[in-house]
Length: 346
Image 1 (cartoon, rainbow, N blue to C red):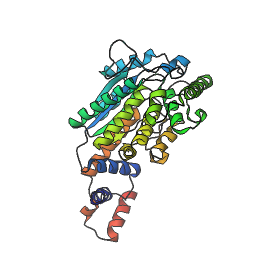
Image 2: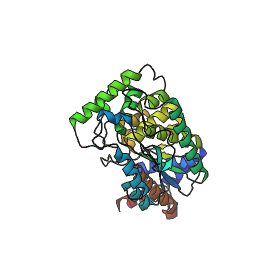
Image 3: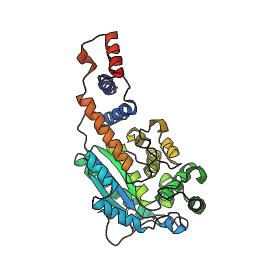
Image 4: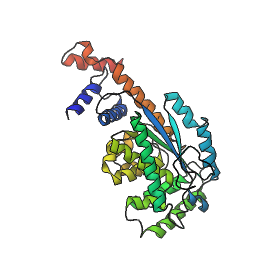
C-alpha cells in the first residue's frame, strides 16, 4: 500500500490539474505498480502468425496464403506494424506458431502447419496445444531475462476472427449474432452467415468435450490465440505488464484471465476494434469499454493498436520523469490548487 501511495503521489504531484491526463494516468500507474519501481521502459512486440483450418468453410474473403505472405512481409520490415515499431523504437519479432508453409515464417515455434477445421475435428491435438503453450512461455521468459519489461502482442492469420468468435461463444454462450463481425474482410452478409454457421457447427460437435478454458481453446481456437494466452499467463507469472491489441488478443486475454484471475492486474488495453465481440471479450477480463484509450475503428491486427498504446505509455513515462512538480511552485494549501487550475486553463 505504501508503494501504491507513492505512485499516486508521483502522478498527482505533476504540474498539472490532478487527473487531467485521464486514462494515460490510470494505465501508467498500472505499469509502475506492476514493476514495483520507476524503471526505464524496455518494450518488446511479438506477432504470432498461424493459419486456421476453418477457412475451408468460406469464412474469409482472402486466401490462406496471405498469412504466409504477410508474415514474410513483416520479416522484411515492410508491414504497417514494422513502421509503427520503428517509429517508437520497439523491437518486433514475428513468431511462426502455425503458418502453412514448408519453411518457418519467423521464429519457429510451430507444432503444425496450421490448425484443423474445427467444424470437423478439434482445431489442435492435446500434444500440439501443450507444445505451443510451453514454447511461447519459454520465449517470453527468455526475453524477460534479457531485460524486457513490457510486452505487446499481435497476430497474423487468415480466418482468426472466426476462431476468436468461436472461443468467445464457447466461453460465454453469447450467440454468434452478437459477436461475429467482418474481420478485415469487406462487409458481406453472406460471409458473416458462413462464420456464424461454422461456429454453431463447431460448438455442437465439441460441446461435450469442452470442460475447461483449455478445452475451448484447443477445440475451437487457433495457434495464435493459444500462443497469446500462454504469453499473457507467463507475463502474469513474471509480474510483467502486457498490452492487449484488438479482438483476437482480447479473446486470448479473456481466456488467460479465466485461467488465472491475476492476469487482470497486468493487462493494459489499447484500442477498441470494430469487431462486435471486442467489448464482451474485454469485459470478461474486467476491462470496461470506457477504459480503452484509442478509438480508431481499426481491424488490421498485427498488434498495431497495441504498439500505438506502448508509444503513449512511453510518452507518459517520460512526462512523469521530466515534468515539473507542483511542489516546485513553493505554494501551500489553496494556492497550489489554484496554480494547478491556472496551468490547466492556460
